[in-house]
Length: 259
Image (cartoon, rainbow, N blue to C red; front, side):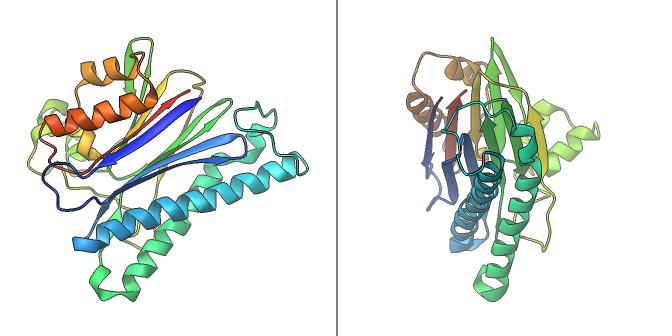
């Protein structure tokens, strides 16, 4: 497996409120992207807390479960795990989201200057038998294979709700004046619900990104880049370059994973 992540301030922002992390836990890979919001410093703090707290907690759950299943002898990264279904990855994700949400919320409550800060979160766990995804907000995960590109996550945004209601089209959503309004975020309220889904993908390409990239979504370019013979590092850097070339209106983060 190959992977690489990159982030960039973009051309119009004074700082970068995106954060990402790729982490190995036992024989699994954890990848997370957060896009913070909330004042000059709040977004930075929220995204950093979101990535660090979520990944740390999830890795502990996974390592603990693997140690129990294999009686302390955890398999190396990428090694097939026959007892994988017993690890209940979806449950561990839900619990880790709750811990990260509480960490951000309590930090904001303790500091009036940070009140209202929050962050999107999109993440995946890559296992030898598939991929488990989660998301809150409008950061996304795409999957490419055999000339087809799919969006694995669904935005928690105002424009997505308008699309779902049939009031605007997908094309109109791309340029809607309220396209940046999200309806769900990590750390804004005492509790939050994350979408969690499992996919039986064992090959192909994954792209995790903030809306600084997905706002310039072009199916042909995204698919061509992901399925090109370039390395994951070259692909991630090309996505950053592409978003800046399109205007770079927001912070840009791209994590590319070759299954």
